[in-house]
Image (spheres, rainbow over the protein chains, first blue to last red):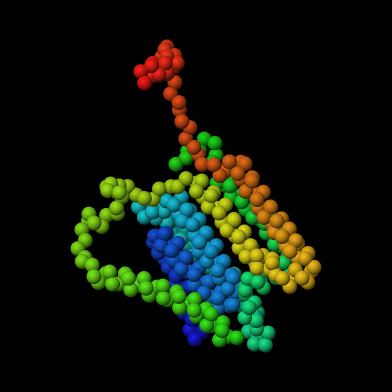
Length: 170
Length: 158
């Protein structure tokens, strides 16, 4: 039964992921990306990482998607003024994507995926309480450094979004 | 163990399926019941009675983007609060460390939050959160008659 759920989620992820690429309207692409994130959250639940699943929905499907929509609105990618991509840029995109695929395959083909051990299995491992224990026991410094990272990200974001003097505003 | 795991998330799945089914029932029933005779006037988007013109694809003010980015930073920060909040008040941890654990984790989170509040303060002080406000132009009268005279006339005849 769980295997069928896995196959269904894989099917959903792949279909919605390819619809992100193939749909003409960028807003539809974003909606399919949300569907992709939801099905990836389903995978997280199957992998016993429930907190990660919830966070994936909150942060990615909620917040990051808002930014994606903003970017689409900024770039004004509607159908009427869509420029025809030249063959050179299509060719370059195929090469770049193909190289990425080759690297991914090369990196992942010898990877040692952890297998399921029945005796050491703890169904509570992905719960938020265990995460908190690990975070405050082993990863305290990275946890504090993460806040510095957020600070840098915030400062950088506002620097990029700052209105230059004399710039036209809408 | 696997049985309980499955059944817990099975409940959530059941809720998801149930929600979808109820929406589909509602939409399907209304689709079957309602008469369908559309015309271009009905199919146009409703804009408070105005004739819709132009495209709704406009470039937003980039300020929205800055606000959204700051929101995302605090959203991700909030994610770190959940693990902390769960282990913060645990009685056995507090008892095992003789009360130090509560203060320790509180101070840790204080530092974490303090660094982020520094960022918020930076953004706030530098005015990135301010919206561009239109500066009202106060009309200057070129009349020779001083404003007090108008005020006196208004007072007299009011």
